[in-house]
Amino acid sequence: MKGVLIMNEGIAFEKMCETLFRKRGYLIKKRGSRSYDGGIDIIMRHENSDDIIAVRCKNTKKPVGRPDVQKLYGAIENHNYTDINFNRGFVVSASGFSEDAVQWVNNLNYKKDRNILRLITFEEL
Image (cartoon, rainbow, N blue to C red; front, side):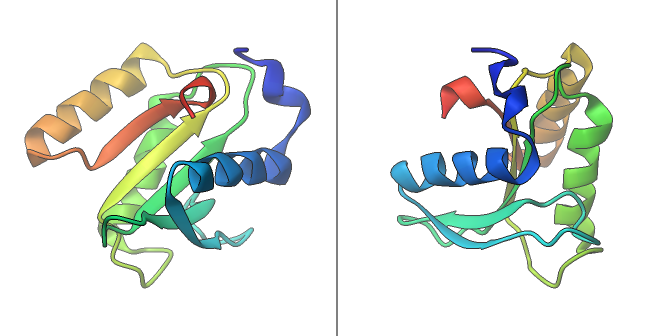
């Protein structure tokens, strides 16, 4: 299924992700705006948690690289784009992740001593 979703670009892909997160017990607070959102496409929390999660949805032909992951992390940590205090972030990709992105997230989560970022392939949803 890798890369198959490219035909459903942008907002349609975000809506598909939103639907699948809802089926997993997540409550969607709102979808990100089209500008000045730091790459945040969905804001949600799980029904069993108070953690606010920022989600970035990437429907690209190539695996998502470190810069896209870092952009979401910057929005979470620095509150540059929103006034929301995020606890975690998820990046969802239709085409997987570069090794550099995976390594960067693993190092970040180790340094923070918690899973602040999670990389999820669309197949996992």
